[in-house]
Length: 122
Image 1 (cartoon, rainbow, N blue to C red):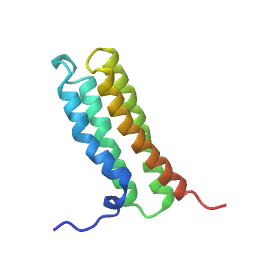
Image 2: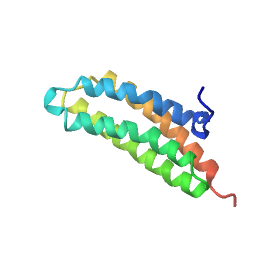
Image 3: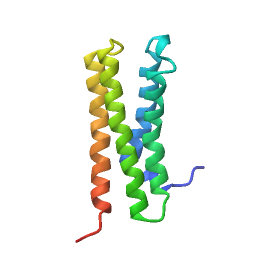
Image 4: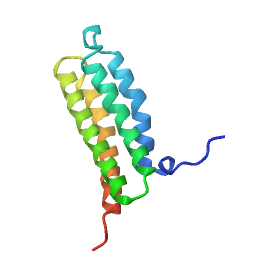
């Protein structure tokens, strides 16, 4: 039985975790020449998002958590650019890109909300 972990309760972590297999599926559809280039970068950036959210949630301070959320948000931005490049190179359709980016936009919004909630109250 899995024990409840702090990051399991975070919707941004759940959506980012669910995006990883989508990213792997997208990467798998790239040409073999991209296996160690753009496809690899896509997989690494996708896994970075839930990993950093989880690591931050396991830290002891809001400042540390915020730092890891900012790293996760940077990885989402990287993913956005990778997807746009993949479309430009003809590896994805605009519909596929739009759907993937919409999922990333939702994750970014949730990360931003969480960051806002962690800011010290003035």
